[in-house]
Picture 1 (tube, rainbow, N blue to C red):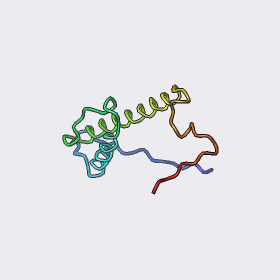
Picture 2 (cartoon, rainbow, N blue to C red):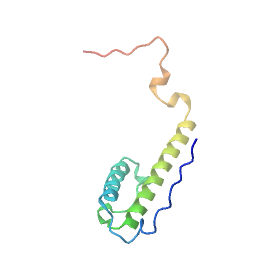
Picture 3 (cartoon, one colour):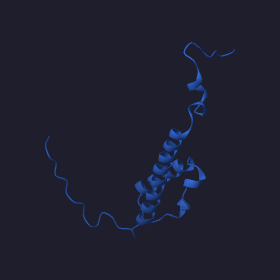
Length: 103
């Protein structure tokens, strides 16, 4: 496999005090929608409409990304702890049963 040389980004590429561009604001919007789906204990306390700079956007993106990862890890750990009978009805069905929809 060929090695691809990637140049280092310039020092001007990230400026925490610079106004956030449209791409960053859109990313913040998308993460806000994802954050709304999280349980309350994982949500950040950052008011997204007040985000104006690249540094503020980076902080919000970092917090929400970490919260999403933590929520998924906690959920996976909880799935592993529950006894088999408590996991759901679909796992309790026997091989020959079928569910029918009533018209």
